[in-house]
Amino acid sequence: MSALLQQTPSWGTAIWFILAAVVLLAVLLGFVTYAIYFERKVIGWMQLRIGPNRVGPLGLLQTVADVAKLLLKEDIRPKDADKALFTLAPILAYAPAFAVLAVMPFTDSIQFADLGIGLLYYIALSGITVLGVITAGWASNNKYSLIGGLRSAAQMISYEVPLVMSVVGIVLLTGSMNLKDIVEAQRDVWNIVPQFIGFCVFIIAAQAELNRSPFDLPEAESELVGGYHVEYTGFRFAMFMLAEYVYMFGMGTLITILFLGGWLPIHPALDFIPEIVWFILKFSLYVFLQFWIRATMPRMRVDQLMSFAWKVLLPVALLNILLTAVVVSYQNGMF
Amino acid sequence: MLGLAKGLGYTFKKLTEKKVTHFYPDVPFPMPPRFRGIQHFSPEKCIVCNQCARVCPTECIQLTGKPHPDPEKKGKIIDTYDINFELCILCDLCTEVCPTEAIVMTNNFELAAYSRDELYKNLKWLDANNTNVREEN
View 1: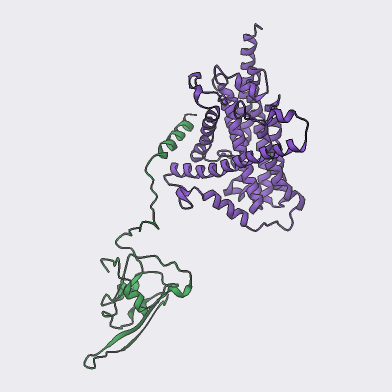
View 2: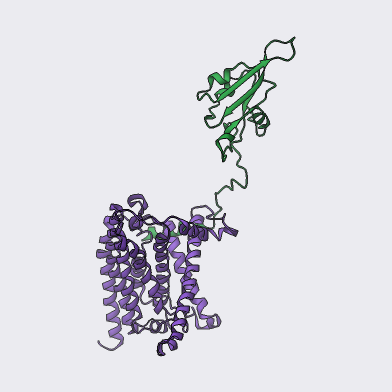
């Protein structure tokens, strides 16, 4: 893939790029389909139910049926909605979610673009989704949508700060923002050990960034009738849901790469297991954690939300940076 | 922080525990013995006293009688007996008032139908509905 990028652009390379993107999209759709299925199953099991089991063997086609239903629905647009923005919002929410995956190194060889500032690229692009959400809230011309959209924007922007701050420690340790370099630097010990505080902050802030419980206030169905996508139906609604789960995919890959050593085996002796298997294993662990947390925790109160980000997470993240900086400069013989 | 871990541990333990879901449409659900389900009607017991139709709070029972075919005997026998399950609230009053136990409750409860017409149950249907008859009426 990297070799293709260095060639002079032509129609031939363009076709390869499109093909690669379509393959990634197919993998993603497969992931989203079965992530939703697995989420419902796991939550069901934890609530002593059995989860979806009627459509297809073991209910495996449940999500397919749900999506087919969504796509067959009438596409409703409120009369007073802002036409252009209403159409744009789902695209604006979904496109960055897909674009961030371009820099993710799934294994040593499977990667789309090897950016020197891969980490920065992820953080910069994922910020655009907030725009999609707030556009959706505004364009729907509905008070609940707007409240949901604003809440979501406030939450996502606030939690982005500790999220970014918590990975600064890793950048300090590695001395690089290239995701591949970050993985390679974890050969001896994964970042989760030296950067445990950073990991905790990151996982909490990631939860809020993904709008998942216990931070799922933007779509608090009991108070906002659904949040920013109240007025969305059918295909457009599916786009928002897709964006949400694709972000989970993105965040899962990012956490695996940053803290869990990417495709590296748990011990060098286990090298014979293919890299991609290690990656999928660690990634699935994170995805499971998502569902587990959702089945366990109630939603946070809106007035606790902001103060938690600014008064707890951010100072902790800053402290982590300070500690890492001290340790790194000590190792470099500064004192 | 300990609370969070405790909560996660609790839900994780529940993950493998036995599920409480009852496979209802696949496996029939046994109702408690005093459950008020769809009535069973036995025409040979009925004396056409009309009490069930009179006591019915929703007036969903309609019945007609005819003179006894044997001219020696007095009284009537039942000719038609219809219960409209669009209206019936399964309140048990008809079975309580019935002096001959001609109308009794069963434990059957599945009434869903695609057409409203199907909810008019006639004498024949109610007679055939003789499974799971309640023990005490």
